[in-house]
Length: 139
Image (cartoon, rainbow, N blue to C red):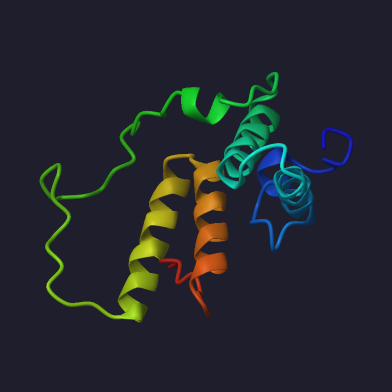
């Protein structure tokens, strides 16, 4: 991937396994190892994350890297006026509301610089939720 990366890493890493050929290639590789029975499906997903963390940070790959990654601090980017620990009660919901909530979580992850997490969340949403469309809070 270091050789294939012919643009800034942030641009190279955009998208998910379905929209970014590089991410798709790594997903296919680890999924193939899992299909062959060498690792579990959950390990394949974990190793994928670890791969992209190592690539993004330019460090050595370790299979548990995603578990050890230091969580970036908020760095003052939060604009929420709600009290910490509250996000509101859910009384009723719809599929459209779920898509909006997940899209908001994706936007928050990206603001915090958690691009790998956001990519994995998008992959999960697309894989598990028929017709998922990210409704980014763009202005």
